[in-house]
Image (tube, rainbow, N blue to C red; front, side, top):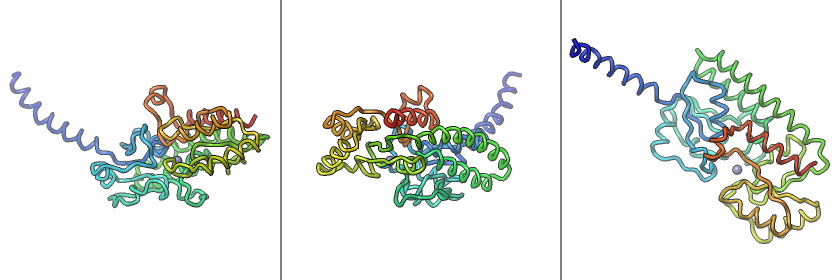
Length: 280
Ligand SMILES: [Zn+2]
């Protein structure tokens, strides 16, 4: 009897094995952390989502492996932020739909950092939800409901950032030019040490000019990202005797931050507190 049961169990196991393999294939692929979080908030457990850039890795310098290109090609939907950032996602000829999350954002020429403004994050979540609703019509209603819940959280964040508009000191110095949308949307003025690409280091002349601007404006803080490119921000802060304050571009989340439960929403709350230190 035992043998018979075992024999009966084998085809069942094979079938189960086959199903598991199918179900584990991602239906939706996202490029990097904020795109993954926005998408997961919309789809919940309805479809399988896979993210390409490891959270702890720098998105600006990322290049996908051949295996990752295949994963993107086979996806029913590929979600990326903008043509100015994940150029490798643009090149993928995927079988399904390709969604540019920032397509409805009022763009600053050549600047991909749209997600760092909660106002633009709202636009992006709505764009992703609408496109996914078309790609997965059976789940459209669920996606809309989930997106509305997440947008409500973003609206709360947006209202909190709106308080920055009342600040006396509106200028802040950052490590790389990632906060232009945030500055535009909340009446602030960003001075960046490095450009849109954090790997491109500023010249000595640029640093000297920044030092002069800081002294003139009475700026006492430099915002740094605490990563491999932070050295230049540290050098500038030291040279003018300014404080270093951490800020997060949410281009990735370190393993340590992940362990503490960090998400786009919690990191943006921390960014708000960090900015309030300069403007109060
Ligand atoms: Zn950046």
